[in-house]
Length: 430
Ligand code: NAD
Image (cartoon, rainbow, N blue to C red; front, top):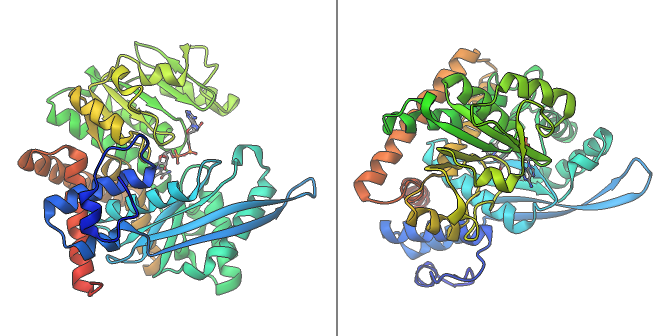
């Protein structure tokens, strides 16, 4: 597939399978397929093919050893037909422009699928936060915010945390933005509760993932107590998924993080894993289970496999080795296009990222709403509204998948692309 086609029609016509598909080409292909099914006009497809705006910034930071390091940062705004741009900021060595662009596109469709009044954006800084001190991260975040501040705004673009960033990062971003433009809590979501963050935001993505798992189990007429789950990644998303799914009765047989994984076929005691994690800073080394590698975790005999760390971990090479019935995409873009083909041929169901991990942006929307209204919701209200929205969209997506005889990912894109395309036409963009 090429992304250099000059019109949407040409782009739709060039869906060949290349040797390597980059993350943004991969999202584009899903969009092209939906556009073809929906018979979207070529001008609408042209608008969706590229980003509205891409800011690339040089970020000089004085490190603790007094040496100057120059980082590279991005903010990509993909499409804002449905509202202000919304999307996380990733601090990761591999967060290059193509990855950030792909994630911005995914946000456009995720927000549309969840019926949130937002467009899609994403930010990234190529850095390794695990090798930086708190003061270095503070300076880097402020420099990044200064460089992209001109394209942010409560009604323009609202960042949030993603891999390698957290509530503290958002507090620094809010402060740096406020110093220049005045106190504006609604400029970021995922803030600490003390600074206007929403109750329930920290666990929201994991809650959404666990809710999708429970709803899928219901569809299968299975009891969570009979379902063995392996989770890759024990950061915000993976650890909350493990805690909440375990509370729902699922048997969590394995978890992992960048340092390695642990496996207990009888089910891990998540509270004990958490206690170990708080001391060791990793699940690796937990004595109550056998050690496994991340590769072994992906290939483990289990029912639901939940990649909740990096993208592109299930590929054409290892998809034939996956031993789960269902892959629950908690991370963004964890399955490559070619990997998806292999899984589908093997009748392994893939619940797509645009639905599965949308709990985070949904509660970010609630946080933004609360900030605008200067009115705090209770935790119970946040969780109830999140659950009801996740269940509603899950059912809509699975019904569309069955009606049109397409995979859940295709159904998700069909619903989302249709909504974005309609907004583009109504706004008069084409
Ligand atoms: P995080 O930084 O809190 O945690 C990431 C986890 O992945 C850590 O446990 C880390 O050790 C592990 N990891 C990193 N490199 C790894 C490797 N090479 N092999 C195995 N594990 C590795 O990040 P997060 O916020 O939990 O995000 C995880 C994924 O979920 C990302 O794809 C992110 O885009 C997506 N996501 C996050 C949110 C959110 O609200 N945080 C929302 C939507 C999607």
